Length: 382
Image 1 (cartoon, rainbow, N blue to C red):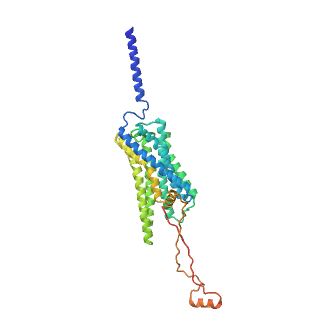
Image 2 (spheres, helix red, strand yellow):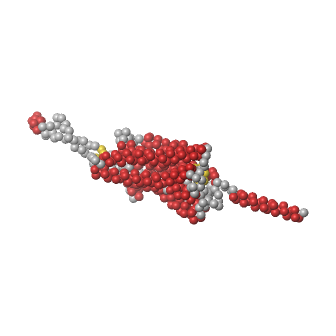
Image 3 (cartoon, rainbow, N blue to C red):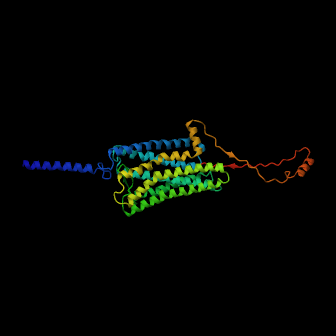
């Protein structure tokens, strides 16, 4: 009898230990705690980079928002689109990057499956808004410069429609994974979440292809088209006024090269890795490899406010005034008086006519030929 009781107690103890080990191993099946693909050193390195991106991304975009709030002269239609970029980037710094930073500090995902779904949706939403705003900005610059007769620099309604359209377009592509077309899940070593690139179902593959084409490739093509047309236009102007046009051409060339390079550096590796993970062999994209594109994509929140404000002369002047605590700088206008070769009839076109006028009206001085032509030259400042 005693032996029988001992065996029962032993089986209960073993059962408890087995259940305990099973619960530990399946506490969160989406995020394994043991093998994440990164060592403790790797997690620390990623956490350092994410911490730097979090700090400077939040600080740079907050500074942009403060400058916009202080100086009313910056509230122009095209600057509203720049403001939309900063808003979307700072939202990434608030609702996205801190969770992946904390996950890498602890070496595991901390907020479960529902938090993973939210993280994937929020980062995709804000990221696509930023991408679409960059392409819209290039189009607005193109229409402002090349279609000056059609561009209305005071049309705020159009600017707000562009902003609303970028958010609606982003929602159109980020809501489907929550509704069953593909799915948000763990990414890389399990310390961040995004679309589950490695799922091979027909729905997931079609969603990845559509996301790459309509949210990454098309904005890039629109940027290249608009900025190339701007460069061609400036090159044609250089034949008329070489010095000013050449200086403007060099400025826009540097601007285009910097913007496109930043776009390619931050987002194209992420898109290419997603395609390789979707169509390549299973396990071809390791967790360690997938970390680098994800960090580069988040670094766009640091570069965007620097690049897109640095090449905006109006914002740069306001930024300097903000740092020095000066008053709002006055807008600079340049007037170009041009001499006209046309002679107005009846204003003394010949010496005989001027003499006859002086005889008729001795008290009046001979009328001088006078041309008053005042033209306002609007300088395009990207």
